[in-house]
Length: 255
Image (cartoon, rainbow, N blue to C red; front, side, top):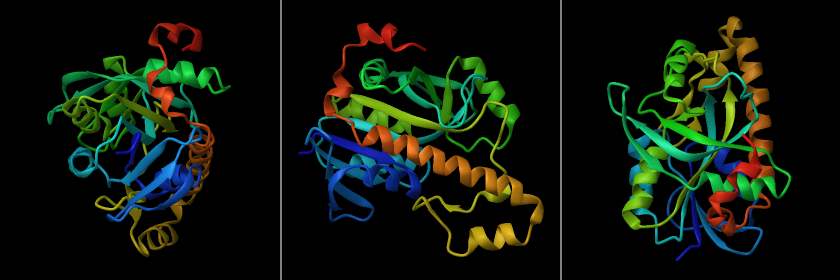
């Protein structure tokens, strides 16, 4: 049994995590690794691919763990969140197919924010929205902002549900990649959704042949590097007790 199972959707997210952990080695199954947190706790890292269905399947296949942690990037839904800001979930708002909120699942974000604040990190705690689809426009993100959530991603709803089924704590730690008024250009979507890795040759060909994408591609690359650094920094000191920090102290962490 692992003390913690960490789930990422994308390859660069997973690398930011595994490069920050200790004693990392392949865990046997495809796109899985084992390692140790800063306190020596055992952890499993799973690269799920994109979306709730893949996250759900990965969680179902994961061996027993003491807690689940969703880790990776998100899109900001409030104006004061900037690229590189860290967000953790106090709850996850799960959207149904029509894009309407269907369920709100509790998460251990308040405690994680308190733990992080005590170690010099500023992590904003609040609701996350788990969308079943990629949001293609800034207008779609603005509409989701009406839910009161801080950020949007895709996998936390499925992972939170899986953790609830197992009767274990769930937390999400996300780093903002794009702000509330921004959307990632669809033409730069060169990720294989099943693996979470860039499709071979796809990114270079897409960008080289379309000069108008060069500024957006450069900006995305800078933000991805920033996000990876921020994620790696907190993962390098993460302790399993972070998921059990007392939520009543959350006010001390700030918003």
